[in-house]
Length: 188
Image 1 (tube, rainbow, N blue to C red):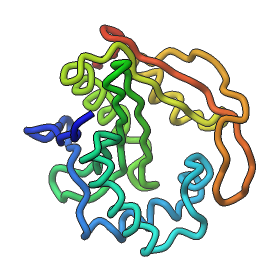
Image 2 (cartoon, rainbow, N blue to C red; image 1 turned 90 degrees about the vertical axis):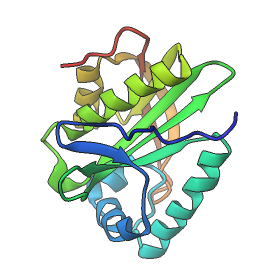
Image 3 (cartoon, helix red, strand yellow; image 1 turned 30 degrees about the horizontal axis):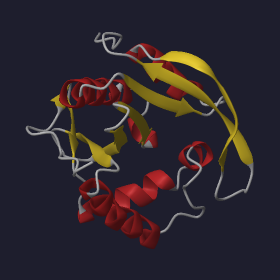
């Protein structure tokens, strides 16, 4: 697949927008990825998470985007442009399927930002790439992420046993598989 382009114009709704990451976002990335809940539920997050980790992660995003592997955007406040979280998409051009993931900063939780961002991203993915399916996995204990999936119309399909290895503990964890098909996205 060729490069994944950022939505133009940027996707926005209800006081948030999805935008490319910037070097100035590094402190916000470090703070968010140092949060115990983010580290617990995202197995690739190093613990402790450093500025060097954030810079390395940022540097890896553009080659992945240009190669058509993934598109990762900041969820930002439209007024202050402050980072509220992250949202990512992978698109498989052969199977016309996608997968999404997200995290939110502790101070941004409980305001519906993730639900708005996920709805925006999924709508754009279905329209732009004519996908037949978007997948999402959640940790079985991450009820907040599961509620976001449900509010957007994702259906729980089952348990992926021993699905992920957590980088910081070495522990293998199960995941719940969720899917969203065209026409199922809930826009409330």
